[in-house]
Length: 243
Image (cartoon, one colour):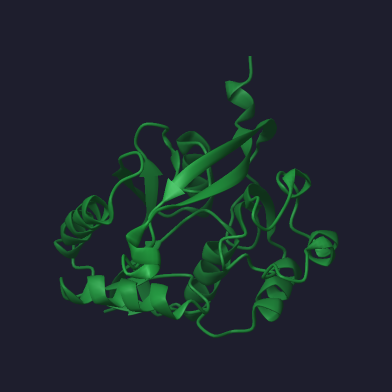
């Protein structure tokens, strides 16, 4: 019997490549794709993708979607409470592990593993420590197609949002930007590739700029003082929603 796992799904590039690798090995039974959704905005957290676009994406992939609704700008305590409650409900369905597409952020991996250990789950990290230049190359060469939906203006300007992630995009990235955006430089939405039954149809909508006060993952960093980041977002709209 295959081990039942929870797959943490953002809808972006690293999630898609991670899922591709998991499916290729045929070692696990994926219980669901778990996605954090902003409750007030009904959009994927940080990525800014509408829930109906996310649902169209996971329908094409053919795996069940489990949405974890997060309040606007939650404290770490609130976030962790929602996460633990969600994971415990999936443990009741025999889940024993949780999969993440993290690549090299040691603090983030430790945080995830510490939280999982509290409720008896283990973490699985299929992309861990793989060179990000190789990963983005594998992503493109495997036939995946993705569009940037959010860029952090500390690293990239407005011209990088709403772009297809291809060879030209990678060449245009500044030297201080990771090609997989592992430091949060950009986020994406994958709309086609080897894990899809058919491409996800969408139309590019409005581009907007927003600023957020974000707490540090580790409250000891900067003495727990929130930092402000600005982000450019490109809205994606299902054709059926356009009037």
